[in-house]
Amino acid sequence: MYNDYFSSEISLVIKREHDLVLIVVCSHSGILNIIDIVNSVFKKNVSTIIGGTHLSQANEAELIDISNELTKRGITHTYLNHCRGKNILLYLKEKGINTYAANVGTTILL
Image 1 (tube, helix red, strand yellow):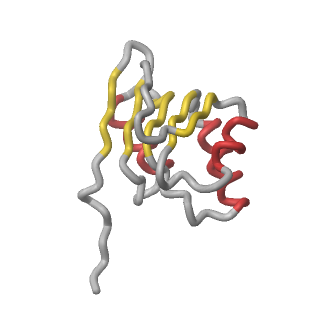
Image 2 (image 1 turned 45 degrees about the horizontal axis):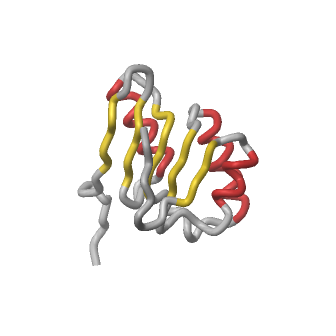
């Protein structure tokens, strides 16, 4: 056994005129950490997240906290898939974030 810091995890950033689109694989290092690093590196804010948030094992309190933090960070759209967690879509919608399940075959127009 050894520590895995997921340094090989990959994210893709699409730079738009006023904001960023973040495409993540599974966010093992934490979706909030990834957003903070991307905002810092690109000097713009992520507004849209596409992919996995690694929240499938999160409890309700954690999902509420994550929803609150995503709202504070200015996230306006999410298209979440395989590891999003059971109720995260509901919590994000309650916060006014445009939220969708991004299942296989989903087309997203940016």
